[in-house]
Length: 179
Image (cartoon, rainbow, N blue to C red; front, top):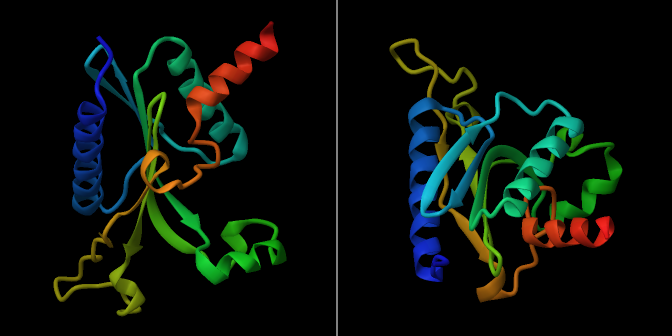
């Protein structure tokens, strides 16, 4: 029996809470794919994604999970983004990493056949205020997360875009291309 929207919401909320805890306890999070199939959660930690080719392969893996029957997919990673008026500066730079207006975030997406949820939380590094980033014990301070900014396609009309969104649509497109 397929999972209900409420069941997916509970899983998504659990993953958001867990991801926040992992990040705040460890000071970072590795790119991670969360697959939900047959009421089971499988976690795939990606060692690193240093370039677009690696990111494309992770995207292809997610589309394959959908093809193989996944009911829900989550993805979490640290990332950079441009927001609001700062988005207008994106064409001035070859990549977002070079743009001084970028914001460092923890990104989390959760996709089902009918819903896309994209959540972003700004990463707050104490060294933004304390240039040394050091506590009185001499240890580097751990970063914190701001509150989640959550956008849901089925609730607020937000249109998800990018590599780690629209997995079901991408799987359908691949099937049409194969036939």
